[in-house]
Amino acid sequence: MAKKTRIKAKLKKGVVTVKALANHAMLSHQEAKRAKKEANWITYIVAKVNGNIVYEVSSSQFLSKNPYFKFKFNAEAAGAKKGDKLEFTWVDMKGDTNTSTGKIK
Picture 1: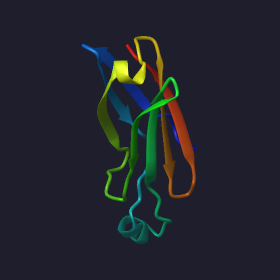
Picture 2 (picture 1 turned 90 degrees about the vertical axis):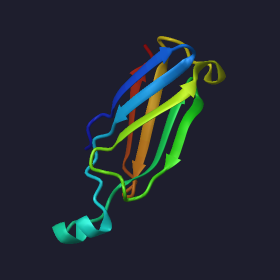
Picture 3 (picture 1 turned 30 degrees about the horizontal axis):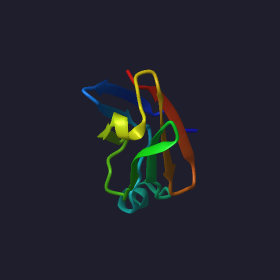
């Protein structure tokens, strides 16, 4: 079972800056072949605040182990304010899902 994604979200001048560190081995096809393991990496990521999607991406095998994500979004457009929870979810090739939350400060 994967560990939680560490999330920091800070609201400043109407913009929320999010930093997220996902705990995942991210084995590409080449690395998996060398290690004699099954390839597995995060393929989809979505972040939501109050049910509104603020970040969504499909990824490839070219992310590093324990990938770090940093993104910004307009707080007013997302209906976000200090104290709201940001929900960060990722899905990998095996179908494993991790959902973590962080509070906007």
